Structure formats: structure tokens, C-alpha cells
Image (cartoon, rainbow, N blue to C red; front, side, top):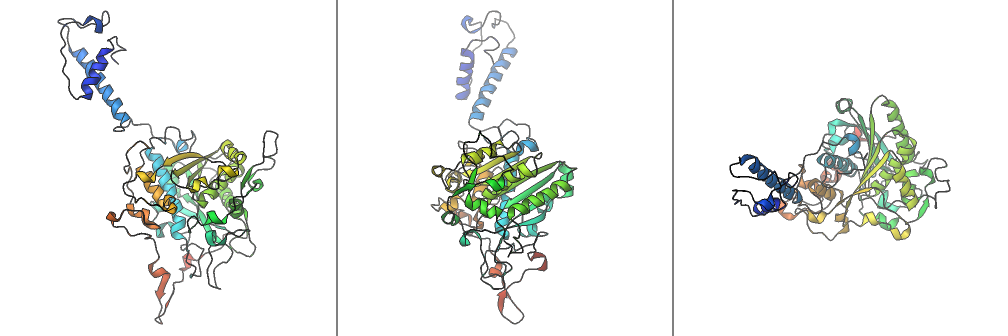
Length: 474
């Protein structure tokens, strides 16, 4: 600053030295010729105030620069637009440091993912194992989703598989009177309420896909086999001379997304057909409103989120921004397919990835797979609230990741929660919180495992309320 005004180079260095040692001792009397440019010197009898102002300003400038380097202060930026939050500019300038509004959106998407875990009935002794414990009208309230009243669930999604995925993915009841023996509840589609849409000036559509309950088991079940991505591609999009190899995706992800089963009243049509049909209906229903589409998922659900986001972006909502916010996403396909994802103009993918998590590197680049999306790299080892676990499942835990997102201040910054978020959430399905915080492990359980005392004095499985019973969507 002072140099630009004609002062010698030693003035800023002197001020910098005094600022750093937190003291100022300066004698200003006369005119040091080698430190003042011609016509800009301080002469005997000149008023000191303009020059003292410059010295103070230079000192403050140095202090601010140093404080920014140490992340003690942040320059307030203009709040990003909704389009920017959905990746219109590929989240440039929003990830490091992590923008507060984007941080909240990532956490919101993570909470949407958590709903699929909290509501899923995974007890094989229940007649409704594999379904949602709660119906569409009360789902968000019964799992305590933050701001539940701002959204309404419009559809449930179900999936099946034509290949054997054992119980690592599809879980079924032991009862001969089970609600369905061929499919599982796989997620839901929700929209903002009319009141919220009006206030925001847009209608937000969300799709959330469920991951696996039995953490990491599916990695040992699915073969890392690449197959043509034909069911995901618009006609002829892979038939040009510029493509060196055909687009391919992992068979397991594609099969779960595209399989149907006529024996199941819930999966007569594939998850792909279900989600495309509902999204098409919603786009038509809200055609007079500004729309955005956000797809989210964790683990295997993240894989389905990316596949469906690409599917929707290129075939249903070509003029609507589609963003996939995924967590711990495994690898999906070969380089050609991943390049197609990147080239889709209205699609953006943000992958929140714990650097010690193994799943995002599965199956492997050595097997012909490539990474997808823009990465928000976090490190759960930086949180002072978490145990130093050696369990790979803990590194991949969704709530553990969301906790880190809430306090992430960059790889070089000190961990510190930037939003209010209960520590206890981390231990919903694991035991990661340090014991000193007195939070029990795996705390999200049904009371008495869903058993109730009937009028005859027998303990029996509690039947769901009428509003919570699964009903075929198609």
C-alpha cells in the first residue's frame, strides 16, 4: 500500500516487523532521503496525521493478511445462488473453505439419505422386513427429519435383482406371510411443499436412495464385472467414431437399477422405470414453476443416485439442473462412461469422501474403473469427538461423515462445528463417539424390537398402522 504511494520498500517491512512483535516504536522527525520518493517526503513542520494514517493502514493490511493465512478471519462473500449451490460453476470457491450455505445443503442431503436407513425394517423376524416402517405421509415426522414440514413424500421406490445378491442387499422376512419376498424398499421421492416453493421461488425435487444395512458385505458379493451401459444411454449416444471404447458400468449397480420382477407387486417395473415415470409426472405437474432436481445416496445408494441422476438429466429433465450429492460412492464404470457423466451439461456430481474410507476405491482403477464427480475430501481423524477406530465400516459410516462435514474447516484448518448438530447422531448405527460424551452405541433401535404385549398376555410382533402398511406404487 505505502509502496504504491511512493514510499520506500523499508517502510512496510518496518511496520510488518513491529506488528509481528506487537509493538510500535517509531521516531518521525525530518526526512530520510532514501526512504521517501521525491516530492513525497516528510519535512520538518509537515502535519503528521496523513502519514500516521498510512502507517496504521499498512499495519492493518498486514494484520488482515496474516489473520487470513491463519484462518482467524474470513472475508465475507456474497451468498451463492441456488444454481451455484447445485454446481453450475462446479462449486468453484465454495469447497475450501466450505461455504456455510453449501455445507447446510450437503447436510440436508445426508439427512435425506439417513431417512432411508432409519425407516428401513431390517428384522428378518418381521413380516414386513425389507419395507419402510412408515408410510409416505408420516415418514419424515417419524424419523425426526429436520424441517420435516417443508417437504412431502410423493412416491416410494422399490428394487429387485435378477442376479443373486444374497442378503447383503435384499433382505427378506422369515415369515411365509411376508409382505413381499422379491423386492425391497429402496428410497423415495419428495418435493418442497407449495408454501416453501412459493417462498423460495422454486420447486425442489429430491430423490433419496438407500444403501445397504449390512455394511461392506456387498463388496464381497458383487463381482466387479463391467457390462455395457446401454440401458442408461439415449439411442445412438455411444455409436460415434470418437469413442474409443463402449460405455460400461458395474453389473451389480446396473442390475439393481434396471431389474423388474412380475412376481412382485412392488417391483413389476424396475427402479429405473419407477423413478423416471414419477420425475416425468412431477416435471409436467410443476411445469409453470422453476424446478431443480437433487439426487442423493450413500454407499450403494450413492451408486444408484449417480446412475439415476444421469438417466434423468439426459432423458427426462434435459433443461433442468440436476445435481447428485453423494457420500462414500463406490466406482461405477469405465472412463468412457465417466466422461459421459462429466459431459452431460445439466448434470453435476459432488462426492463427499472420507479420505480413509475404502469403498470409494472399490472395485479399482486396475480393473478398468474411473472416479466420478467433484470431490469434497474430508478426514474423520481430525474430529476430536470421534474414537480412533480401526473398523473400515466406521470410516464409511454416513453419520460419521456428516459430523465431519459439520465441523470441516479444510485440511489445514482446525476442526470446529460450524452448524449446530447433535453429536449423538453419529452413534445411530455405530459406536464412534468417545465414551466421555455418554452416548450409547447403535442407539437407533425399535422399542422391544417391535414386540408388543397383546390382550392374551403374549408377546407378538407389532403390526404396522394402516397408514404405514406398504402399498404398491405402480
